Amino acid sequence: MHAMIPASSGMTLDLWAFLGELAARLWLEGTQEFFITLGVGALLGAFTWWLARYVALSFNRHFAFKAQYHAFCALAAGLTIVFALLFVSLRYTGSAAREIVDDWEVSLGQNPAWAESTFRKAYDAVYALRDADGNQLEDFTSHPHPEMGKATLIPTNTDEAKRTAAEIYASEAVDSFRVNHPLLSAILWAKSESAQGTIFADMDRFFKATGGGGRYRAEDAIGLAGNEIQRELAKQVPRVVLITRSVLVVLFLIVQTIIFGLLIRSALADIKESPVPKLRGR
Image 1: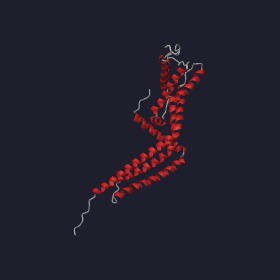
Image 2: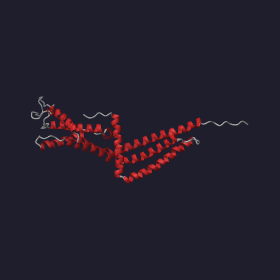
Image 3: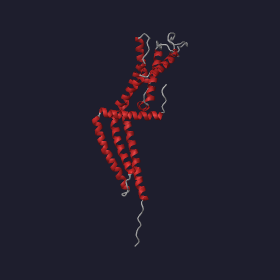
Image 4: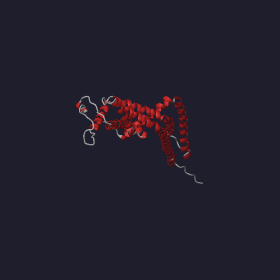
């Protein structure tokens, strides 16, 4: 069973992991580009700081900039720098996502509990298969249930048995990816159907080569599922980058509008709080 992680928490963790990988790709694959972007971002940040101050003073020329208002300007400038780095680093979405998928494959391949659990589910699913007369489709006489604690195999002499086992391995692998990387899975629309056909073909080749004997390696199913996710990734990356950049621009503008609005509000409030000089009589 997968460890249950709250959806929002898992999505947030995956977001930070993805952003971290994007930053790493920008640094490793485009170091010069990183420094150029950082320099341009710093200049834009300085301009944003000046603009925030200028806008506030436009509403109140006597507005006194205290520490908290300087903090607003610094926040606007800092967000500009971060925005510039993220906007550029999104061009490395493909390689960042591939690195994450590769790490997932290695991690799941070294998880014996997942392999055993998936094998049992495949065993039970094939065991439950029946032919048109209601007879068990495969002969399990010399293949005891895994709970017996003995070495056992899943008999897969029929295409239906192979297909059933392939469906279990594919869906379990993709479900594991969805649980561990909910954000990336949602972005890439990870599906198990494409992986099922690939794993079925590989199982068919494996069991034909072994004469129906042997135990199909979970690592092979994981690798094939990972390859299918990578294939989906390659097709969807341009769309993902375009959408993500558009969302990033909108969020940036919204947050900056809020910061500028708070500064303007403070400047206007300062006018009301300042004492109005009394006019002298004639």
